[in-house]
Length: 570
Image 1 (cartoon, one colour):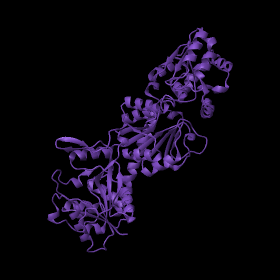
Image 2 (image 1 turned 90 degrees about the horizontal axis):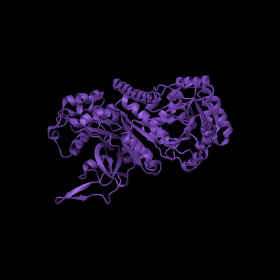
Image 3 (image 1 turned 90 degrees about the vertical axis):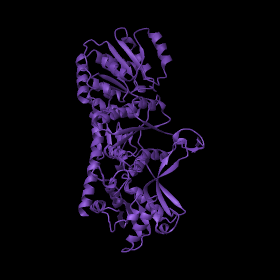
């Protein structure tokens, strides 16, 4: 199958003279389209149809053919490009065989990708279509004017993702059977389509559009895939927000979050932090990938309890850089090249993938855990209990009961997370003990303050162990589950905590004995504090953000180098 690409690019313009060769990034606007055509598969010729010698020279310099100049009657503002394309194809056939397929690429859509051109050509090669056009999906509530009134073009109002989509022709790609050019029908009688995201289908009409194109080209688009709720906890959301804040400080990246509609608390927290949230409803992997593709991210950051292999494989096909935030490599269903880059708070003894960054230096904490001053007390006065948002093992109750003998001399403060279900049982315990045993509802900044003020923290084996290390507070840890147990056996070697084991297996006597040993040993508490501060400095979010931006820059540099090599060979 012979394929000829035609790129219409005249010199004049009613809005912006020489718009097609105005510089966008590292090359003229026209060159971005030529580059995509050269990267596409199975194309025999790339012809630029222009009426201007200057445009022709630019086109040739970037690897396109300009075997003729467009005649004057085809150089003005035309109602249709088809006469221009028809002329270009007929002229090209004077010295070459007739093509089977003609692909029209407008120079004013600079972000269309080679893989989308390949998709259009593959579709028309099936013989099912007379033409394949690129479209952008639109879920807006559209209206039309009728006798001074608005009439809806939708069946019923509702959420965007509940609307039946309509498709807007964007002009980025049109693949035609050659015979269609000889008919009166614009695209023939059987039109297929390929869906481009908004960025890929973005069209430059004027200087305002050009400014937007420059911004799109310069700034990476970063999408966080994360969820959080009262039941599953908010740790992943807070971790992603910490990196988002560091990215916003160190770049002009466009940042958005993609979150499941099933977890409202996480959505509310991210929205209150000032970031746009894209919400998707459960509908399988295809729905999720379509939603990601609609944003057209250059980077996808996954912060999930488990990252599935099929999801990573689908992401890899989108061409975005993938960053996975994990506690250990066990949080990936399978370690493969599709994971691309992995940032973990735990080092790994086993072989790690090429893009692996691990260790406590990558503990990603919020700002209020950074650079806090700590006052050491020889005589301890305060112990803090915090076992996560839901505390499914009721460890708060168990530990509070175990420490009851201490409460005459030491304040034992218990934190109830947002999904804490044991309030009534705890109140009964308070009445039984009758001593200093307050229960507080912990929120965000307040927890950091409570941890800093405590002489000892008892917690589970999640991010709390890194938070107290950054604050220099010693810890006693009881794991909530087997995954935490494995991590804490490794983490305890750093000397910042004493690990007692799975919370359900540890008896109250063991808890009380461990706490008494640490509280009465001031030298040990000081040593644990110093080790924690040296282990975790609280700037893991900045390090993770730097990795993201470095990968974006490296990919950009690699693309420029590849293009330069191709231009040199040309």
